[in-house]
Image (cartoon, rainbow, N blue to C red; front, side, top):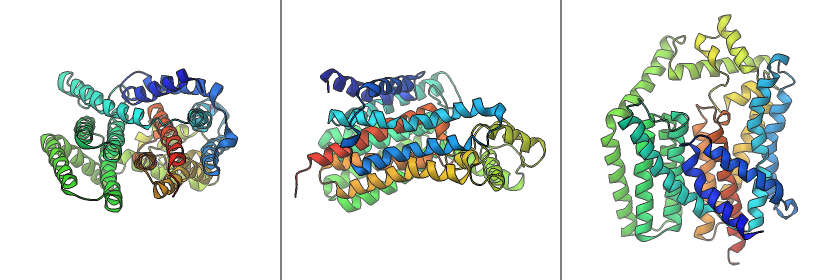
Length: 414
């Protein structure tokens, strides 16, 4: 593998986190370069383990299932279906990118982690500019507030795991505290409740991991205390915004309970999910067909089958679980959930159990939390319809899985 290629891959991985949610197409450009290089250097399928091959093949399952659903797509909507299918094609193309990274026999987790730390700071500055100086209601980065808020917390998680597992002393403290404060600030200004939910999931997951693997001495307890004080300070500083957004969410649910036809944040989602279940009863195996969901929502709004007419402007079901269910039926849901989330999760969990070095634990834990993050974000957001989410998931899985396998081979034999 040429030395220049290794250096280029390191640079691209480092640049990806700061660019993906803050610039116009920055993450897509990095992804496109990686894919072009992979077409030339992505070889070595026979050298992969059975577990790696299983993950790569299952990523293709979503593409097959969603392509198969298009037998139900109306002729007039085939073009729209083909555009949506592009996201699943990208998941299938993870294989050549992964092969290229594996051929280098290098690990790129440090580059991704340092890029993640930089990303949290850049996003905090961008949030301050948009809300504090430009007087926008929420911080949205370049794309959308949900993309911005979710990825701010995600990059924070990667930074914190890197700091806790691989760094020591003042470096660990600086990375953890800077990333936490910056990401929380950016996420709070984005008003993205889904990112706050994953922050809680992360704290629980990290606590479980720490209880099993960390020896709690005075320095550890002091670090935990300082971190909690800093986080509490950020929450106190922005409490008015946080409490207002949480209250808004509860009011949205209460409004839906009494007036389900009224358009609210949660009301639209619950209407879309209810409509999805109605459609699945009519098309249980393959769904309505990729590309037909928008027309079905317009039809259901027009004939009164939907409680809310607001669903007429949505081309997705606002969830990575309900969206493939509507478009691809039970087949689509099973293939996408199993292939994109469950199979990688199980492999990373196994790698974490077998990890014998800090490096191996970092890669396995990073991959595990990547899957958990997107599984949580996707509860109420159709992540796979947004390029920044798809690109981030692919790059992160490639870096953590290739790193975990490389670190595993370097572990000393018992």
